[in-house]
Image (tube, rainbow, N blue to C red):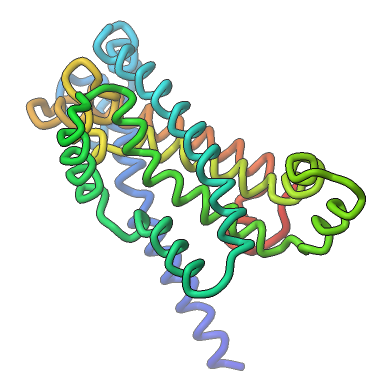
Length: 270
């Protein structure tokens, strides 16, 4: 019993230390973004919203933000349209071909994003497709679609195929069976996949850096270029905006589904 208690204490301390190492840099950036000074200092001597007002009053940053939101919406739509049917097809397939196809579709999760961005740049250059918001969206979809597929496949693993067969026997066509039977059972995976696709698009810099230009630079790329040449709290304010957007989306996910569902801790809400 004593050994189990010691192991429990060790695990608690380990989790606490790892959590602090992950959250501490984010907390520091958030606090620095509210500093009243014109330079980065921690802890901040005073609190102010001046740097956030600067961000929202500057057309360069607001245009980059809206462009990022539009690209993220495109990536989410592309990922769902491509990822959900692909997951359904892989789920019904079997054998070596299915395993190979699943490995291929999920490989972007294992390949560094900088490699994906460079490879897509070469491909777009070969077909003479110039940099634009569309090329950024296509590139980010390669990564985001893999997350959508993985989450939908996880949801499909808990669906009894007999339910879909019963719907087909009762006269339901494939679309009606999906809309009335399959989708309600996998909706949590689809919703979480959509939120992940949106967040991935907002935070991605490696793929967007290769596939954008000066006129179509999303917020992450504009921030990357800014902090290369400047060291003031404005960069922290922009970074905090990206963090806050991600936190809002994850909170929505928790309210609708429950974060514990992602880790298999408990069933989804609803």
